[in-house]
Image (cartoon, rainbow, N blue to C red; front, side, top):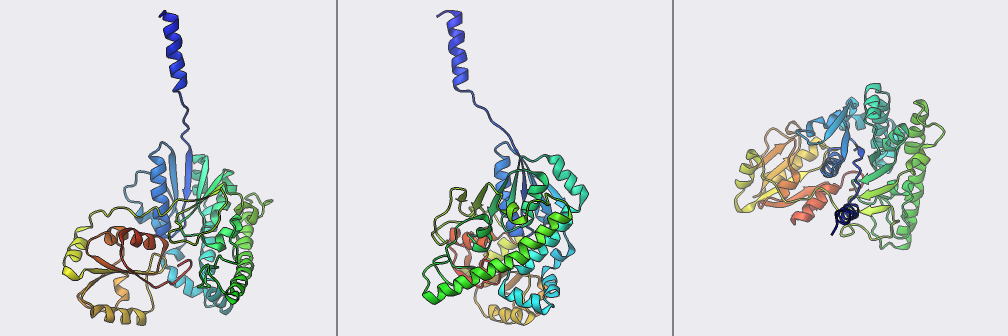
Length: 391
């Protein structure tokens, strides 16, 4: 074979196996709850490992969870209300009308807080300049964080929404995801997909009420915010919300109601459940000290860190009578001073790793999305105490 022929063959092989790759700059924007942050951090870490440059826009109330992360974070100052969310809810609900709406529509207060967070974010010129200087190619936003479309319009980039929850009709409907009221229960109805006629009537009533409340708590306040800060004021917030490219749902039909979904909606299953890692020494010692009876894990999530004192006292009395050890995620100062020696109160714990421990016997939970799937993954029985939102 001549030199020319060999060169031609070599060039042909190079062209045949030549491929292009593009490393994008991706800005992640989770909501201010730690459970939402952990989902986004894990997704961002995985995407960064594939050669993309990522940055996580993180409120300061979550800064303690950043740790020695392999990915870049941009911390912005969050309102002080986030540090005492229970007190903030109590303050806001002193108004009788708002208190009534909050009982009917549990997201009202969280949406109010979201508005405050978003307002403080967009008026923070230093952070806004850093966001713009990053020159993101894509925004990955939390579906339930209404500030995502505002930042998208600010940056003029495509947006992908991630749902850290199941398919919640209140948030899915504005994204044009079909949620037929005949078999898709609205949040708060306590119905399944097998509804009687009167349950469907009730479901329709909640559907209509949700639309009305969406106007007052989503479209109007965030639309006004866009206009105030001159962030594409010619486009309504409703239009901005519908401008996402894709919706990624962190759920599985194993636990969710089967339904038809458009091509732009992808169910990827739970992100956080994984094989358990070794526990910190103090927790491992506590777990091992439980003997054959094991440990009951009790936690009510990141959004509600304390309950009414009378409820906590009753719970601590009952827990003190059990043979099992009780690992309780709660502020110690919220509990009575004379709690039983079988109860250990902690401010934070690695939930997945505790549930994956061979001494875990039961999980008493508010049924947050991540905890529900982690318990399912590790095969730990659940006692459900739903308190809020999509639980």
